[in-house]
Image (cartoon, rainbow, N blue to C red; front, side, top):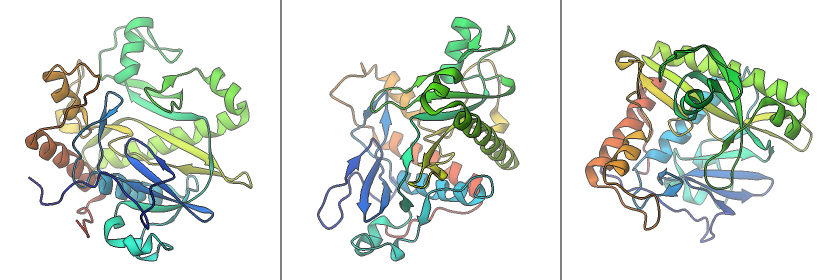
Amino acid sequence: MPSSSPLLNTTLAGQPPARRGKVRDLFELGDDLLIVATDRISAFDYVLGSGIPDKGRVLTQLSAFWFDRTRDLVPNHVLETDAARFPEPARSEAAMLAGRAMLVRRTEPLPIECVARGYLSGSGWKDYLATGQVCGVTLPPGLRESDRLPAPLFTPATKAASGHDENISEADAAALIGPELLARVKALTLALYAHGVAHAESRGIILADTKFEFGRTADGTLLLIDEVMTPDSSRYWPADQYAPGGPQPSFDKQYVRDYLESIRWNKQPPVPSLPDDVVARTREKYLDAYQRLTGHALETAGA
């Protein structure tokens, strides 16, 4: 088992976060926000009873890696990633926050998620089986699960506060944010995905699909926000094991989902905890993805 214990909840100066998501805790620091990625893990819309040590660090540091690589494509919300330079009271918690927190600009998030798909998997595969389409885009007949698509697709989704996000058409997305802004985020989504695909391929990894979020500042500037091309927001597959025609081995929490299916959990409370071997193997998958993509080991100071 890893030596570190998972960080499941965070406070600053004894105060809880302004908002607690399934994985991230968000604190308001003046005009800015502090996003802390905990080691919580969710599956089937529930936060599980076990955390994955260092998972939050993987999500934060891999996002920081991609934010830095893509800043020439689109500006982003990151202000600082060095916990020693955070404003108080976060600086006093630098040991806890090291490698797992970002100080970011406050934005008004767009009410859609911007999904790029290069392969036929997940909800796209289910959609194709039922309709021959993915989010309204007609595809050639006879495609197999996990096949590479003729060209990457942009498939927007609504952002659900809880539960699964819902795929929507581009027309529906345009009704939510306007056709001009939709055209802009579509172009950015496909450009960001192409960048990620090329880099991942150079590291022996397939980036099958991913989702991005964008927000606007008070002056209207469009920024890339949230997390970028992490194992939680993407499907990463080892290229040397790619075999279309079924599900693929992955670097994400599919291993956890498979375990929960194997114990026949009914996906209702009480939420199970994970055995030590599943926790350890899941941690290995996250760390493996991080090291392959970045070329260096994870910063685990304070672990």
